[in-house]
Length: 453
Image 1 (cartoon, rainbow, N blue to C red):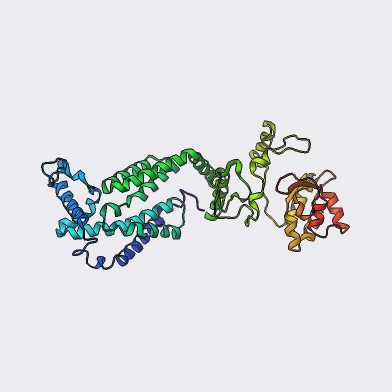
Image 2 (image 1 turned 90 degrees about the horizontal axis):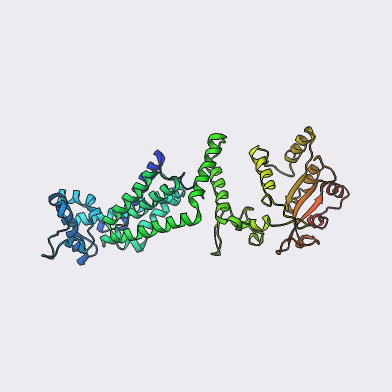
């Protein structure tokens, strides 16, 4: 998923993308509207009273906006009734497109068709802009435009001008998203402008836009997404400007995806919540991805973040970093002083663990704990366990230092289960692990689990 607000259509490359999309949609419109597109001055779809009504409406609007702009609703129908233009869609938002055609040619059929065909192109461009605003890539945004512009539910209404001219809906939503993401007044003014333009173009479209905009605002308020966006912007500023980290677009998308998983799932966060997909608690719905571990096999059975936080030790004492203010400030202090340093490396390789051990020995320190989860399961599968065990033997430890691992009764663990899904958190003193390895007692992953307590 791309980061909303940073991949939107902006700048020179964004304008180029919009222009290319518009050209594609224009070509496709001429193709799928055949034969109307070959004879726009002499034929119209469909040939019913609506067609005559809309040709008259556009002609009247073009006439009245110049000759009597303050009384344009006093149309020349249904005399002596007042404001008869309001009896149907007034189509005033389409006048900027119809008027030049009528002034140059005097042909209401051509004006009607130009407005209708142009609405298809603008619907595609609007959906493209909205998709880019939401962080969708160029190819995906192009597909969004194709769906909105040419889906039968909309395109087959091309002859009903009040139903086909809904092109300002996506532009209005894109502007509203931009305002909610950045809080800039000009984006709110743009959203209001597009809503007004849509209301003048098609009342039906204005209703659709109003409902969608209201739902968007309510969603943002209900989920606290405004705060999420502000925090995300602050994270980006800290990483790129304060620390000058050279993050690629892919790096940032992954960071945003992980942060979103924490934001959206909250205490319900679990292994299968992201960042490659999005879970929707309460709805039983999950979109894409397979969890933090990639495949996500059985991820739905893992404990949630909330369950981990409220767990106690063997003496029923809460030990999480949120169990007390002192614990929280300790962890926060480590982070503030930049003492939590992530290291990426191969457990079975010649560098990662040995370098950590060398670093600790040079400072007369000890490795105090080593959380391995179930990594040894995969090390055995890949034939790398021996190299891993030899690397572990180089770490500076004492008799108190232990492995912390996730174990399962399915793989030889016989102790009490911490979780209802058959898993447990178990310990294995590192010195004992090294001795057992040297004695040949750890021949497979079952042996490792069986010796964990």
